[in-house]
Amino acid sequence: MRLVKQLGAVLVVAVPGSIAVQALHAWGHSFGLTLVVGVAIAALMVGMYRWVVRRTEHRSPAEVARAGASPALARGVTVGMLIFTAVIGIIAVLGGYRVDGWGSPAAAVGFLGLTAVVVASEELIFRGIVQRLLEERVGTWIALVVTAALFGAVHLVNPHATLWGAFAVAIEAGGMLGAAYVATRSLWQPMGLHFGWNFAVGGVFGTEVSGNEASKGLLDGATSGSTLLTGGAFGPEGSIVAVLACSIITVALLRLAHQRGHIVRRRDVRPATTPTSAAPATATV
Image (cartoon, rainbow, N blue to C red; front, top):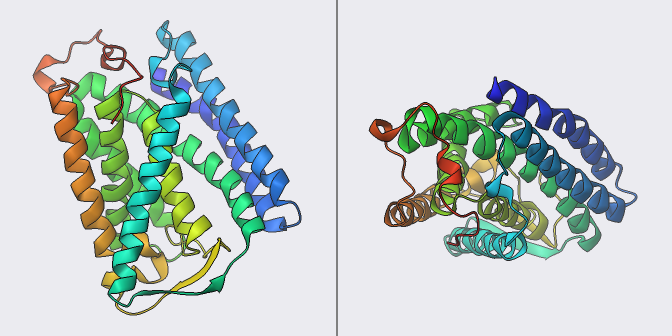
């Protein structure tokens, strides 16, 4: 019932909030308003998550503690942007990406608001609720695999989705972001990584985001060539380069989680345990 109640509470904000921000962004007349509304809705979702966790688990949700939130988010955003910049750089060197000129800084601002809502909803739902509660019952490894698979599966409804694209997202986002949560026991780190990655994909380099139409980013970019290299219509997230890069990061994060003693093994699971409260939320990657 905790799963149902927590999902319901977050979705009450996430669903209408996402619809509103997408409509504002598509309207295209006030990208600043899209940013403000998007950030406000993302903050409201975090607040709703805090409230429902307190009500259903009778604890303070350390995974979204205010202390250390800003630096954790900043680190995550920086690392996420750097990872995708390295990915698109490799694709460009291999002839799969080019820049045709400048894009639209105003549209990139609006994309910030849209990204904030997407990231907050997906991280709170998949890492904060599903992965965390599964981990209490079956341990870290099974929870990570199941959550990653679910995350990839929901992207099958995206435009231009393919089984390969869903698998790529499961590895890149489901695996890497789930591992970031396990390593730090904080949702701020995966939120930051996710935000930095998505904004770099659409807001900076102007390419497709998980099959969605390319946004007008800071750069007017385009991919061409082998689908294995570029991801085709699904975008660079379907590229083998992105899969390999994020797999390496995932392994590194899981090694860090092991060193910190954050791995919950199935044999150690107890019905009444709450593993996420055992480690400080301010741990850093």
